[in-house]
Length: 133
Length: 133
DNA sequence: ACAAGTGTATTAGTTCACATAGTACACTTG
DNA sequence: CAAGTGTACTATGTGAACTAATACACTTGT
Image (tube, rainbow over the protein chains, first blue to last red):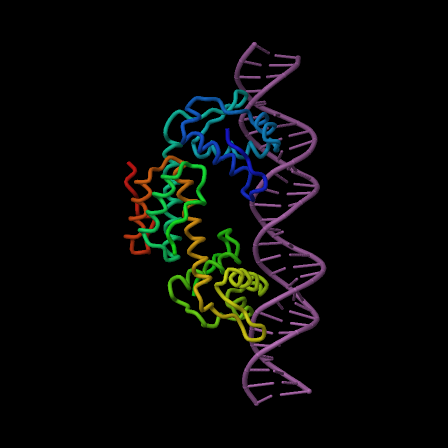
């Protein structure tokens, strides 16, 4: 399971949504699997059930999960949600590239950063000082 | 000069800051050049002078501009601000890469998107449908 | 000295998003 | 019927962002 940072400024609801999207992208949860109940997850994170409910509603609207009254919420089987997530991720990344380009970064520099991130063993990422001197 | 989108949800102050940073990155304003006065820019954008003042304070804190009481605000001569902006842009892009990686996108895909953006003539960017089918 | 224009500071008030709190209802399962 | 589930609703607290109004210090030109 993922962690919540209540002081990050990032809305809790968004953190929950992105947390589950990432879990599914990484294959840590699979289609058909039951999600934690709204109340239990709220209890676990010490947050309000309404916030969890809101996050689940977003996830359902995006096709990542589906909910059944009286039974619970479940991870979607099909790839509709997955494809949508990938598409959105690409759009977001595209926006990031455009912003970097507008600030004067070259395509070469950006690809260098990409390589650096994918080489990094996923713990330290601020150490990756790209040649800028 | 840049445009403001008062309904975008992005704080006006941030839009002003980023607008001038972009102008400088593109070379549309140069070192020593005088900035619009706090009051005149507020009048031009139909916003509150306090908001402009706040944005100018941020720009000055980042070394992009400097202000002189009674005279006005001016674009910085040296590259201190520029370097800081580049460094921040790289960090932001690094974060975007990490997020994309966490969602399952490959380094190859990201580089493809980078190339696509840098090939695009800077007007249409939603049309750049990267091969995902 | 004066006036006009500049940056800067302060206080107060509005608006809005976010999260919380509490309650209530519909449904499924045992 | 009871317990657990999703869902809906209203009310409240909090903080960020922006507006509003005013005031002060400084520079420039007359």
